[in-house]
Length: 158
Image (cartoon, helix red, strand yellow):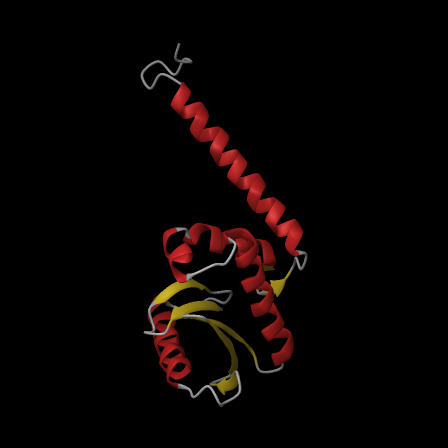
């Protein structure tokens, strides 16, 4: 699971890679959010929770949290968080919470490009950024085409 929350515990992005019922998901998010936000900054950035390991890092006003297997390496998961933050920074040029709130689909796109089925698939930031730019260009072309077409007939406007 990937979870982004702010200092008040409000969810900004959440993505599960295991099947949990909705009630279980809410319980997991609530328990982890309360635990992470309430932890002292002097404690380590990972702890065991039930049959999982919680790895997190705070950047500015956001906590980036990964829920992973107990056997997973904590330091590698911290690197995954760092990679995600760097990808966000590359795209938004100095990302902030508002960028994610108003453009959360891009954050999900970055997560989907980086991680597939809970495993890191792409570690090249420049490649992820090029995919994002390509997607932006496609959306821009689509909007321009929609703007230039007559909404009733579908023909190009003169």
